[in-house]
Image (cartoon, rainbow, N blue to C red; front, side):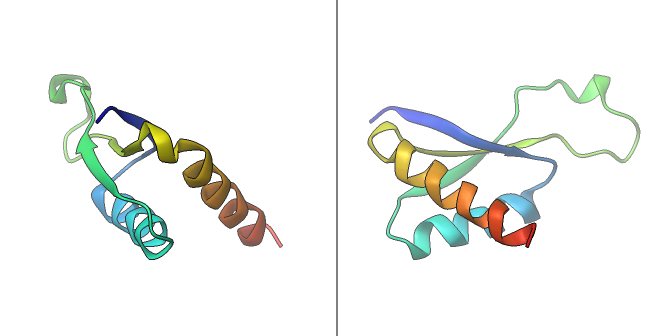
Length: 74
């Protein structure tokens, strides 16, 4: 199984919200910490978190995320 990053968010809480959306729509998803080195972050900052899905689910995941962005701007 190869995974693809569909979102990069500033913290784990936001990643968890996206995971909930994707999983509630039947997609397998997980998150992983960014490869950003903590030495380049200001004191107290968190490292970005990547949300990943199986490559076969990328189109559906991106469509879901895009539709949520459209809803938020209404």
